[in-house]
Amino acid sequence: MEDKRTKDQMAKELHALRIRLTESEVAQSELRHLRLKLSALEQVVDNLPLGVTITNLKGRILYTNPAEARMHGYTVEELVGRDISVFVPGGGWTPMSPEQVRTFRRLARDGLNLRRDGSIFHVRLTSDVIRDGQGDALGVVTTSEEITREKQEQAYQEALYKISNRCSQAGDFRKLCGDIHNIVGGLIFARNFIVALQRPDPGLLDYVYHVDEFSAAPAPTPPGKGLVSEVLKTGEYLFASQETLELLVQEEGIDAVDTPFVAWLGVPLKSGDRVLGLLAIRSYTEDIRFGREEQELLTFVAQLLSGAVVRLNVV
Image (cartoon, rainbow, N blue to C red; front, side):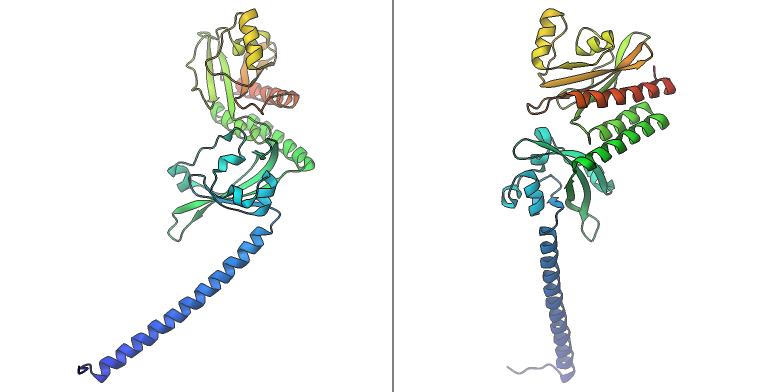
């Protein structure tokens, strides 16, 4: 079959083919370069002493380096494909909302992580959202570093300073409670955190800040007869477990609670002899109970929150 293309057409086609061939060679060269760069980065990250984990937006672990796995008592193979909640005491973890993903900026904080053997340890975490060329979120990369005892003490002092500073400068009490909750949560297990204030008129207990895994904030109501009312009545801190609660129900006639818990700690907010309200934390997890460390920290926080209540004339 006769080829009817002109020499000019053939020359143009040859030129186009040369361009495509050159582009292909460039693409292959770039691909080899990217693969080499990726391999080098993987070697670097795999050998970092810092833990590194990449998850999708739903919290599924896509990659973790050996340091992260060792820190938590696993192998890399055991972690890939699991949910990030495997690192979280109590297993609770909530994915970010689309709005949170859209506005997310680098987040650095101190927190508590869970090892495979059930032990809890302090970590310093930094998270970033991974985005594509169009700015769409693909996942989250988080680095973690176990905090040594010396660093824990330093972080503890820094956190106390932040709490003191926030309480002295805050203008919105509810926002202050949220800020304090975030800081305290980096020092002790405080996923369930409430602040309640006594309103002298008309004598109601107002849960101004209430974060709980299994219950919503109660409406303002008279204190009644329960753990909260015991703290308000005595003006003293109170430890309780489900067992001690049952004894109080029998001996003191206080009200039972709808959702069984493992541990509860409440401390009063006071101004002089006047009890303004209380601060309380609760655990629903068998391996998380409260002791002297939690009581001393919450007592310190309660004193500062009490000053903020008075300064802001909240009650």
